[in-house]
Image (cartoon, rainbow over all chains, first blue to last red; front, top):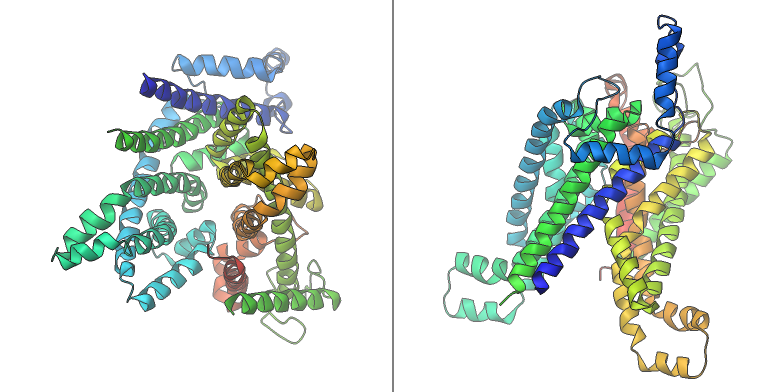
Amino acid sequence: MHGFIQMICRVTRIVSLLLLTTFGTVVLMRVAPGYFADEREMDTQYSTEARNAIAFQQQHDVSAVRTWARLMTGVMRGDFGVSKQYQIPVAELIGPRLRTSAKLVFTALVSGWLCALACALPCTDLGAAGVHRWMHGMSTVLLAVPVSVMAIFCLQSTWGGPGSVLFALVMVRDFRFFSRLLRKQSTAPHLLYAWAYGASASRVVFCHVLRPLRRELVAILTMSFVTVLNACIPVEVIFGVPGVGQLAWGAAMNRDLPVLLAVTLLMALSIGLSALFTVETQAQRALP
Amino acid sequence: MKKALSLALLSIFALTASMILLSHRSSGFQDREAISAPASVQHWAGTDDLGRDRAARLASAFLLGLVGAACASAITAAISILVGVGTAFARPRVSRFLLYGSDVFLGLPWLFLLMLVRSMLPLNLPSHLSAAVTVALLASLGWPIYVRSLYARATSLRRADWLLQARANGLSAWRIGTSQVLPHVRPLYLTQFLLGIPAFIIAEANLGSLGLGVSEPLVSWGSLLQELGSSAQLGTTHWVYLPLALLVAILLCIELCIPED
């Protein structure tokens, strides 16, 4: 019963996150200068009746609450509306782009996370202080470079691509967390017993170092997912990758509310689900 | 030792930047005789494609970036203290609601929101207003990160004997908060203030390099780093890399000033 109530609370949190984010997006769009201006009203090729119809349609969007309610009702029916910029259904726009972005994000996330873990493991040897200092220094320098600058560099030098930039971002951030965690874990007394009993290095690493830290490792994966999701927008824009991030950027610049709302919903849902997954995994581990 | 060296280096940078700006070098002045010029006595780090002195622009960006990030970090720390400590001492329902609200806020995709809000603003926003708006945006989205740790600390203080004694002696809630609780959470919010500065500098640089940061004629790290996007500039001179090198050096110095624990 307690678990069921907890699950309800978590789902409620995700739903409220979605509602808050989408409502905030609608309000922002409404107060943005130029929202009610339609360039077609200034186009003399349109007849007076057509221009009046456009102006009448704009009046329907006066109330933010009504606009939000109308859009959310459409979303619940599976209708995300029609893009103002491209004049095609939003679902058709997002589908193929979602596949591109998902592939980019998940490849960078998983490879960066694994690579960071692999780089942090040698640093657990307290005798390898030199290695640890060198890698820590490199990661500090790379962390100081903004992701958009890294993307511009890769683009200009034709070295690497969007995946490399996101991979580097994840690897560098996660390395800092992993090295700290693993160094702390490596001083645990039970490891000395394991070594004294002749356990192999792989057994010590997997059973006695990594296994007790699995909750933290999953939590770091979730944080990295949010980081990559945020970073994929400037990266896609700079590299011209036809993903959801580039679509969001274009929609923000062109005040395309239906597309913006759909992308915001998608982002908030992804972040909410990743947090839910982390909490669920930790809760399951905590159960006897 | 490292901390002292970093602080000394930062002070040297700040002094040098101030001297450059006070020596009548304007960051906005365009020397049309020296477009994309190399380093010289007149222009210590050369000029950009509009003939603007790069050293003066760097100095301006450094000071504006540091002051802006420090202000944003201070506002963030203030909001998180208010919410974190207030939540610890509020009634259970109110504190659950506030924590829930901060968690919901934490779940928002903040860079996307930053870009969204900034792109909603008019393109012809005056530069000083765009700087203020950027600082306000960064501050308004950065506060939930620190609320939980402040809340945890304040909760442990709430049960302390000396606090109960202060209450029993009739001290008002405000007095207890300011004179008894705040000094105990000071190491926490000072660290968070220092952690926020490099984070906000990078966030502004990310926004600015996409054209959404502080608008011209004010100079920011983002607008300086936009030069790196021009292949023509990269081929002409190596001085275009100076803003990036300086940014990395400054962030490293700030990072070394932050206590490790």
